[in-house]
Image (tube, rainbow over all chains, first blue to last red; front, side, top):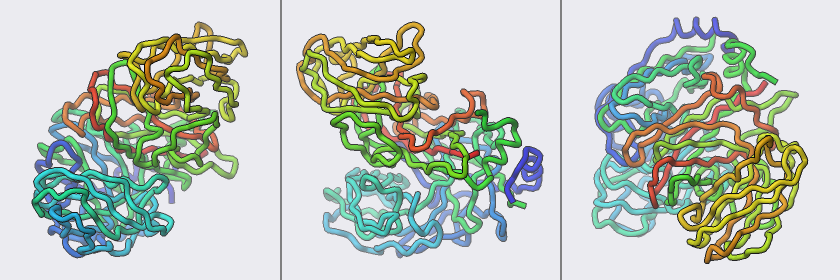
Length: 257
Length: 276
């Protein structure tokens, strides 16, 4: 049942359970994912084989289970030392083992495993995360299957150089998402293998953390949120900027009842 | 026309099953100067890069480069209720607008009137529409006056001028609105644009007619690629509910209030829409 009134919203907020996420520094000059950094929830294991991820994956934000009627995000309280943007995302697939010292087409741990949520790929973004420094930044292209099932080649996309940095892949014009990534080719060798991997994820809500070292509270009444639906088996993580000196967030979610 | 007659109405619309969320993401190296906005119409990302316009056309949501959304059905209307964005540039203002008409292929060295023409298919009475000078390939470095001949919302012929070239707008993706004259509420049709003299380089520029829908400001943060963030919602008294007309060609531009020079700009954001 939808939340149909302000009183319903207030009641949902009252029965909601706050979920806490706290992560330390992330690199500057890039977006960073919360996945591999220690904190709450715990760090994920650096990925190798491509695997679909879910609520049960260690390191996922532990949202309430058994929400048969679906979850809605009611409120978020964000504390970041540095302002920036925080994107709550559903991690669909995570792989690693790609290197930066070869310009050959790489298929290690590719293609990525089949999606188990958002399976048509629409709105599913692709990014590359650096797990171990690749020495310097460079560019790459990937072959991927788009939201219509067609095989496409990405535009030339950037890589960050140091561990923790995440850069998004640029789709071919007209594409709105990806079902899988087939291969990966860097433009020029950096001379350092490093280790990097591909994330397939769906952004669920973009939050603006606008206060220096303070709290930003957002909900459907202030306009900061839109009562977004959260898949009950989502593997939630944050993609964020400006959080290089630490981030703490609490989310309030409630089931539609 | 008001969508949200009270808070309960709004809450209900958010969860009523006709909610749409669209991701926008753009990245390119562009020139940022004070006083010029940058258009993301031809910049790669989500949505994909539009082709440079040639002949005058009225783009729609089906045009490559338009921000994706579905038309409302069942007699409902579509409403933009929130935009949230993280941007690399700071101290800036972003604008979501409906791109109504555009032409490209005009020359920065031609000093006779260059015809625009075409016809609007949305906001046809002109109210709220602005005409922009938009650059697709760098024009020259000589500062000249561009004079727009147009029909205003009162059905009167009018002219307006801006400076282009030189230290004014001259680079790819630069876009600047022509000011309206006293008493006018918008642009209904554009006849032509005339440069006072050659900018020195033909380049490729055009005239775009757009209808601004929502603006948001990026705060100052000071970190590369993690500078600005903003969330604007119609609920916090920022202009009321914004209707998205069927087939609207949603696009975005932003304007920095600091001179960043040539720099890579990146933004990632989300538009929230509801129907009623």
